[in-house]
Amino acid sequence: MDRLDAVLAAAAPLLTRVDDLLGTMGAPADHDVWRQLRRVRLLPGDAARAVAALHPGEFDDAVGLLRSDARACADVAAALPPPDGWEGEAADAYAEVRRRVADRLSGDGDSLDERLEASADLAQALIDWMTRARADLAAALATVLSSEQALTLAAEDAPEAAAEVGAYVLRAIADSYAEADDLLQASAELAEAIPM
View (spheres, rainbow, N blue to C red):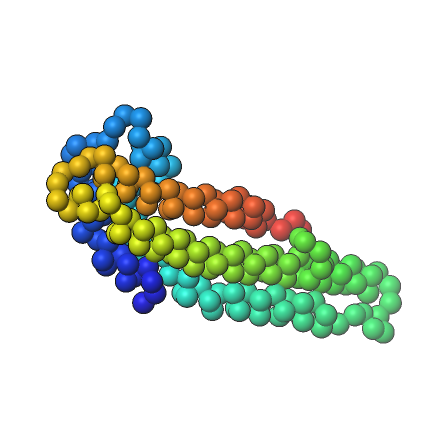
């Protein structure tokens, strides 16, 4: 259990109240909550639970496994036997195939080991992002729990206060999600096939 789990448990009633008021009473037409709702496309409570469902620790093993597989590719490429003692067309053909296979396994940016390393880097970046997203949301929830708007919402139906709390929480989540989108866009080439 990290800080987000603890803070989210305390903030759950407030988020439910905010979601209910936004859903039934709305918010002022020009309020920033509408922009944040368009960015996240979830009500604050649902969005907070989505971030809380991110578990960076579940990806820790993936980074090490990907790096291990990259090293294995490099080791296999280095261990491919040369055509020692062979001569002629068969030896030349084998040497060419051996070179191509070794280059695909280990070498430049289009090799399997480089792709595996890049995938490990992406996995680590996503772990770091999830950790930051959880911490940022925990900080945002702690702020709104101690806000004047939270006190107002505890006493009355106040659409303006609900909009303020909702916008603050959603902004933290939207900013984190924009960072994740940038990470994924920057790694789009990992989905492309390795040319043969």
